[in-house]
Every structure is written in structure tokens, then in C-alpha cells.
Image 1 (cartoon, helix red, strand yellow):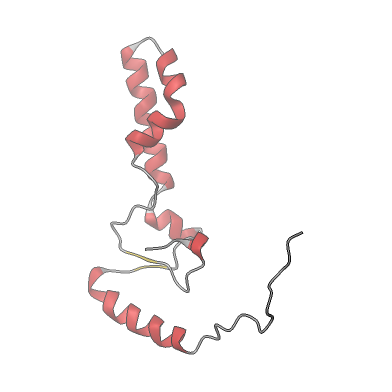
Image 2 (tube, one colour):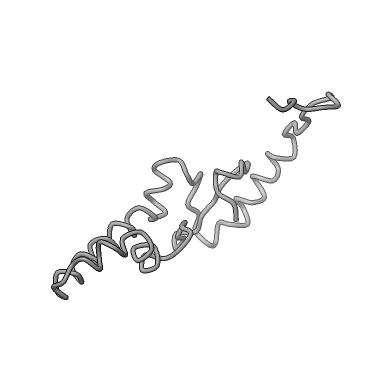
Length: 108
């Protein structure tokens, strides 16, 4: 339940996963509200919004994100247990010791 920004040992995803802060409707409305409001023709507005939503869906596609190494593996539901066991076993030997220093990096 954490992406690469949180520094996990692994990031696994199910094939149906969507990695995004919000869905396409909310994201398009949040980012392009002013441009959408400027379009007066309802058919043109609908086509513009639909195109933006499709583009957003492509950007959050889990296979696309896996190809960009945002996700380490796309795992079928029946394989999740085996993947977790293997990854926990690998993580058990990881050196997680940070430092013996009393104080970390001082403020700059």
C-alpha cells in the first residue's frame, strides 16, 4: 500500500490496480476546469473531456507504470501469497542499521 516515494522494499500490484490520487473524472475537473468552462459547444466540450480522461487512464495503467519501474511486479491474485513469502524472506536479511551517530545531519 505504498508507492516508490515511500521507499518500500518492493511495490507489487494486482492487474486491476489503479495508482492515482483520484479518478479520471475528478482529476480532469481539478486540472482543466477553466479550459473546460471556456468551451461553449457542448459536443466539443464532451469530446475534449473524454480525450483528457482517456489520456489520464493510460497514464495510471498498472502495466504502463510497471514498464516505467514504478511497480516492481504485477501479480495475479493467486500468486500474491507466494510473492509475499519470497519477498519477506529476502527482506529478513536486509541490513536496516542506519548509523551509530547520536545526531544525524545537522541543519544547514
